[in-house]
Amino acid sequence: MNRIYTYLIILLTIPALVVMAGCTRTGDTGKRSITVSIEPQRYLLERITGDLWQVNTLLDKGADPENFDPPMSALRSLHDSGIYFTVGHIPFEDAVISRINSDTLTVIDTSEGIDLIEGTHCQHNHSNNNHSHDDTDPHVWSSVKNARVMASNMLEAVTAIDPLHSEYYKENYHRLITSLDSLDKELTGLLKPHKSTAFLVWHPSLSYFARDYDLEQLSIGMDNKEMSAESLKDRIDEARHHNAAVFFIQADMDSGRSESIARQAGAKTVSINPLAYEWADQLRHIARSIADSAEPCNLKDNTAP
Image 1 (cartoon, rainbow, N blue to C red):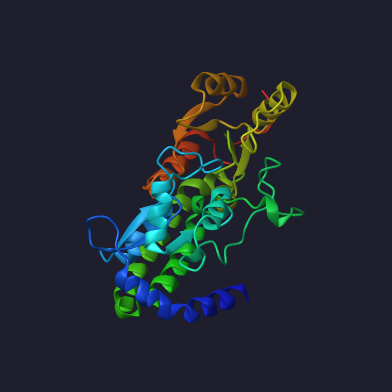
Image 2: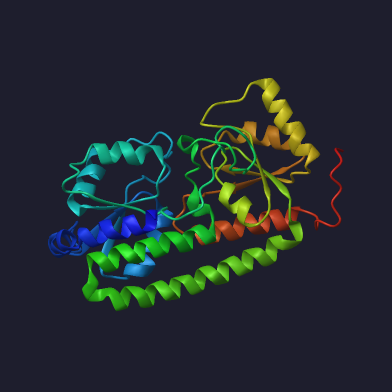
């Protein structure tokens, strides 16, 4: 029902969008522009729109989406494009939308139709039972399966906005889906022997990835809040009990503290960038790190050392 509602909204806004698409420009390229929240979205959308649109990313490189406050230049660019593809459920998105005249901004939620996970910001596992909608895990792009849904939503929107080039967009979309299916098959092959393998992360950004490949995500921090010493010890003990061999960290984290936690947990640190444009390479990097560090599931001994 939600997808039908979304589709009707898009259809009703086609006339305005077509006019907007014909007159919107950004920078010196002369191309019509669309704004997305994060770089992985730009990766997907550019493969659908090809060279017909300029795709702008709102989140600055290296910025934290949990507390991002876009500069006025980014808001002006968003206002000028008039079309905003959100991830959905990222805190800064609602704040940004409230600062733009809603009469001049068309918003497309690219997470529409995804089976969302609840509760990862209050506990370590990826169960989605008994949690409120307000605690939705926003990191939907960490899943290839979710990326297929996001790409479908993008295709639906751009063909409504620019029906003249719909066949071009559809051809590009089908090539993208083929590449996503190939990536999913590759990751499944790498991780199938390691079902139920646990890994550590600082921020629970890989919940959908863990769900897709039957892995266990154990996070050290929640909602950018540091754990108490006792809670941190409990989490490290849990990681040792589950034989978590990898601790995924991001470049902006305290490397000294991360290395200390990794040593106590008996894991190695692996640097990742979940918000990178080449997000597919990041997923391969994550999968290979887990596969290279983990024992096959039929050989694992889950007793604490």
